[in-house]
Amino acid sequence: MDIAAVIGTFLGIAFILTGQAMEGGNIGQLLQITAFFIVGGGTAGAVFLSFPLEDFKVAAHCIQVVYFGKPPKFEEIIQEIIKYAQKARKEGVIALEKEAKNASDPLLKLGLEAVADGAEPTLVRDMMETQLSQMEEKIAAGAKVLESAGGYSPTLGIIGAVLGLIQVMQNLSDPSKLGAGIAVAFVATIYGLVIANLLTIPYSTRAKRKYAKIFTSKEVMIEGILSIQAGESPALIERKLECYILDKKEDKKEKA
Image 1 (spheres, rainbow, N blue to C red):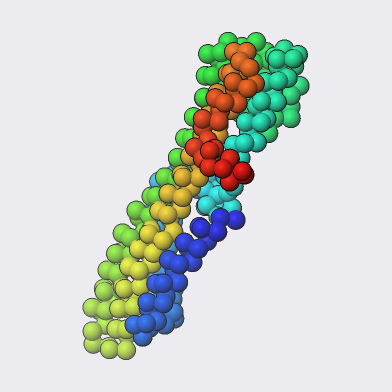
Image 2: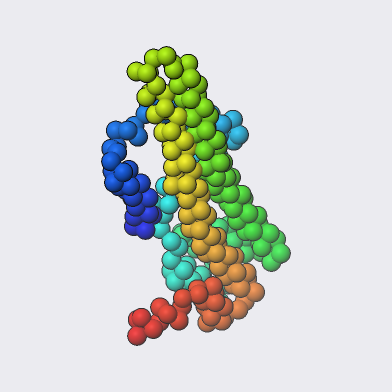
């Protein structure tokens, strides 16, 4: 679990509620089912209208990645590629066909099979980069769903506020009904802003940051496979791939 993401979510909500309490309010004042239906339901409807169902599944996965996604282990990926390089140097690239079955990543499997089949380097690169591009487009679509929800919710909050004020204006002669209308008006606005600025937009930003590292690990795989096909030595491949790890020197210092 990503502790920083959990802390960020908790702090954002906790400080808002604390501020509310310091002003003499209570949580119950922020619990307005009518406002929730207007903002939550309206935002959901707008997003469903904007995107296909497949993108929603990706968006849900992005939220899961925010809290539970693990960063790629570059050292393990590099060592796996080095193992394939050593195998290819001893037994030839045809031996990579068997190794592909146990590859840790589908992109590695694709590359190893292509190299073992004798595909041209340009074709191998195109195949692997195409698969990576498809993954990037898929994640970008999921992140866009979250960003769009963050764009719609404040507007729906304003709509909720207007509806609440309409209720107030229609009941000016009955003071007992004014409180409910005013509450919906202000709470709907709060819901819209909280959904956008504490949830959906931060989710999108965090997910894209995490996937950026995943995409970098895929680039390491592509470079490694092409280096194996070019017949480069395992030692050279290792040095080349370690350039992708920015904190390599820091890791070595800590181990020392």
